[in-house]
Length: 79
Image 1 (tube, one colour):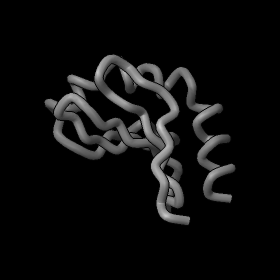
Image 2: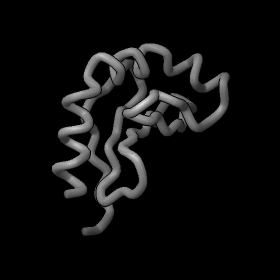
Image 3: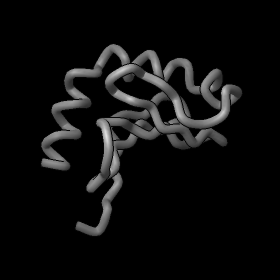
């Protein structure tokens, strides 16, 4: 376990990444294009600046749509 970051999707110049191993409630990271956010998979709350959250709107929309798959992947990586 070297803490490999797994990119699950690319939205524009942003990567949606599941950290592995990771702790706490299931969440994903949105990184790229000057954006560095953490997005909860339970309530989609965003850790990071509001400006960055605006810039990551498409990525966050994708995360909401693919929540079940992301939680499953998260649990497999961290199980």
